[in-house]
Image (tube, rainbow, N blue to C red; front, side, top):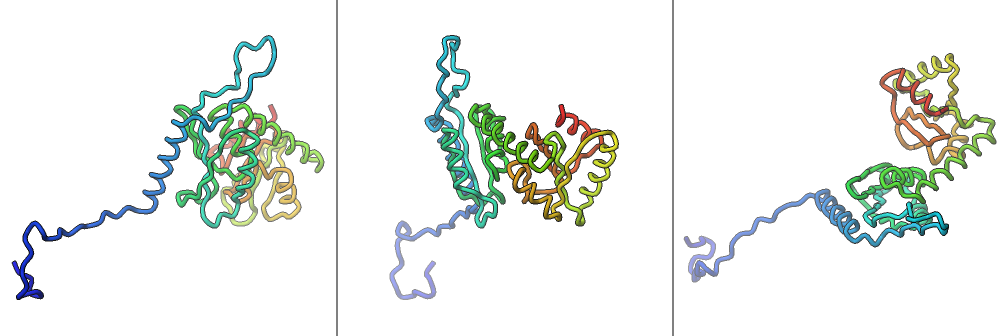
Length: 259
């Protein structure tokens, strides 16, 4: 059929006609996810990004228990306009651990996060502190140097609390007294447990003095930009974000803190 706008001109042959092409639209998030998956797979397969700790020199050692198989990968993902991202901290931790932690800008996270993959295990968690990153590496991969970092950070927290005359064995209860139903419920349960001789250290977001303690002593354990309420054990590093569903669950958490 002739084009009415080009009447009088010679028609092109069928094999010379240009076929219309409809582009396939791919969302930016799909592209980002695809890139991250490629990076993770490449790092896992590469296996040369892990520096295994040296075996201690002693006659009784037959094998080096700290060695890794080379399958450990860690990625630090941070969003645009991030308020609590600390790239220099990540680089320093990477150097301290002898582990190459990749750093990437990502639109798929709202807060700094770390993705750790080791063999058949993987975990994505908040990475706003040295303790959080080391805790994931220690828990997922049993990475020895990361576990040492955890012990060091807990020792600093306990020493700092002692300077404020606060018993490190107390359960730290981080909350707000301003319009928080879950916090109000936890406050009532905490008071009941205190009657049973459990000890808590309350930190109200609206209390300047208490927040000073939180920022100086517990900045590695409390997520000041996260949800409330939060419960923290300075002696073990165990944390719980959000309310407990049952009174006995909070009691069990408190028992573990002082054991």
